[in-house]
Image 1 (cartoon, helix red, strand yellow):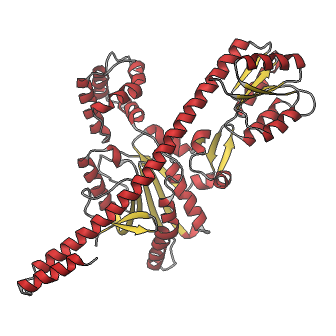
Image 2 (cartoon, helix red, strand yellow; image 1 turned 135 degrees about the vertical axis):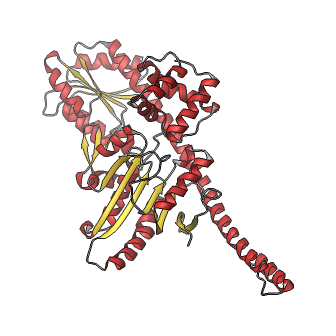
Image 3 (tube, chains in turn cyan, brown; image 1 turned 90 degrees about the horizontal axis):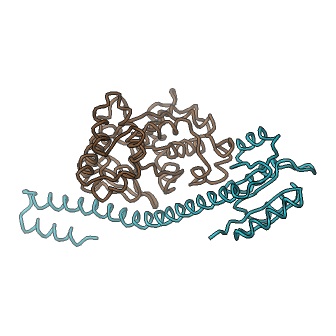
Amino acid sequence: MNNLKILVVDDDPITLLLLEKRLQKEEYAIEIAKNGTEAIALISKHYFDVVVTDLKMPGGLDGIDVLEASKAVNHRTEVILITAHATIDTAVAAMKKGASDYLQKPINFDELMIRLGKINNMKKLVKNADDLREAMDITEKNAGETIQNLELTVAELQNRLSEIESVLSEKSIDSTERIQLALSMLSAT
Amino acid sequence: MTKITPDEVKFIAQYICNISGISLDQSKAYLFETRLGGILQEFGCSSFNDLHYKAKADVSKALERKIIDAISTNETLFFRDTGPFELLRHKILPDIIDRRSAKSSGRLPTPIRIWSAACSTGQEVYSIAIVLKELLPDLSKYNIKLLGTDISDAAIAQSSYGAYNKFEIERGLPPDKLLKYFSRNGDNWKIKDEIRAMALFKKLNLMLPLIGLGKFDIVLCRNVAIYFNLDDKKKLFDKIADILEPDGYLIIGSTESLTGICPRFEPKRYLKSIFYQLKT
């Protein structure tokens, strides 16, 4: 079940169309943007699991800006950068800023699909872990309340038992009185 | 993945209990396979028996440390259960500060000694540090000793470094605290120096005598005894009772109980939380 929400950003209309069509074929939910400004506007409006963006784009806002905007909105959104051969260093620098991967042009679609598959798997694992934690939280809370109440009750009962024990072994009081005292302590709440 | 036989489970489980107190049985055979499988391969062991033998024969204990790192469960998060931290902020810390300040009569900084036993990767310690920072406007008036210990070298290393990935950082930390006390570094978040400076981290095996730690005003020992057998639980809390100040406080995990384990403590309630103090 491929239901990753992906935003594709590229200033080259042909690349954009190719990516859109190819990813839609894999049943991912795709939105497109043709420059950094459009991309950032979409990112602030919708949630995306992945943003695939060209690194160098005209118009003032480039792939790094898109990356930073995406991480600021939701650090769980994975960002894949598409780089031309000459900008590998920039791509590596971008990885340090939180990009999860980079792909060189011309795009090898098989490689892209594999990377997206891995991201999908990881998201499912994370969801699993989140669910487990939620279940554990609720179980712990419920169990915690029960156990703490029991703990206090047991402590209180132990105290009362030792008080009754002292009364029953108090030799200075006669036994009938001792028993009456003990009985009244037992019935006290 | 190499499979483990029931006989091997028996021996390895005993070995692990001896070196760490972690109590595992046949029902946890899968845990040995998944958690120790990589170590088997890394050290060229042909079987779990072989691993057991090599670990015991290793004088440097490097293999033993790796096994402990791999087999211990590091589940932790910031402000786990929230209750204990409310307890610290609204009841325990104010009480301790009142009593200790009265004793030192304002000439020396008020000492507050806190120990987070089995602190894992440090989230509990930093949560306590944050509570202290927010409660006490002038930390210089206090001589705060905040110690975090764990049996796993790897966990202590991460605690000490104070950096967390995006999954760890979002568990339990309200966004305002995240921004106030951590700085971002790519996909990681690192605790700010002023908070880091409040804590000390040390490797410690709770199965061994608790020497050289001194006494504490507050001890948090949460969700670690759950991995021990009854005998080891009793010994552990007995040792903790020995190093707690007479009017000190013990906080354990929200689903844990000391009934039948350590009669030296009595439970007390504050709002929705429970803490323990030594019986007088």
